Length: 278
Image 1 (cartoon, one colour):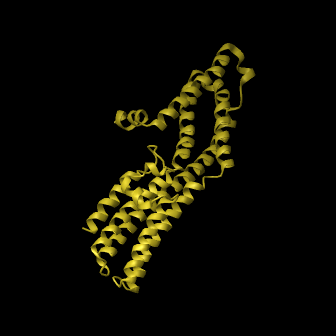
Image 2 (tube, rainbow, N blue to C red):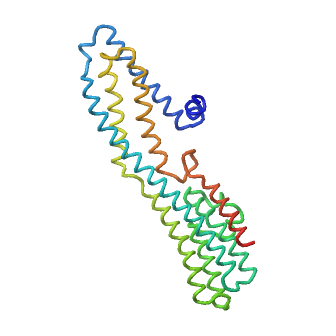
Image 3 (cartoon, one colour):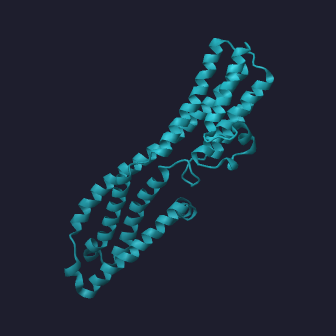
């Protein structure tokens, strides 16, 4: 129970390992006031421990707000990609079942719908066109905005079907509603990507944590003596962990372990779209 629930998560997580060593560094720093206390200089270095009790409450509120704000960004990103899964399935079903779209255009629509989330994933990660899968790169051509190029091809296909009479006006409006969702989701993801939490607030939260940890061992060394070292390590692990995790999850589209598994979501979309249009 202890090994699986406590030790393994720390050892297998790069983020938690990083926080662990920062906490150990804070514990090493706390040896200074402990050594001075044991050497008889306690009256000169002592700080009121009640001061840190009050500060820890205020800092706890600050970190909770920081973490909740960062996690809300992560969850919104996950919600948007969940909506993309549904929009892709609906678009596939409607292209397959509505109207009388010819088989060549239906196959092209399938390929474009599957390519859209892959293009969006690469776009959000800022990957160059050379990093796109070959089949997607051939569809978008030489462009800067990969998802927009895919959506444009889908609208081109839809317009061609309308002109040829393969879909009527009502069917076109139904299909347009799903294609519109694709670009709305893209815009929502771009908003999360390009609008981080205000820098002043992020710096302020980080400064508050560092000031608290820098003064904490000086305030408790007189009362806890050698126990100050493990107490500082535990406090630093919690506080630095919350700040570090918040910093990681507020950018959910990267490659870190805490980021969204976009590859798996793209595979889910490809599998279900292929099944819907089989």
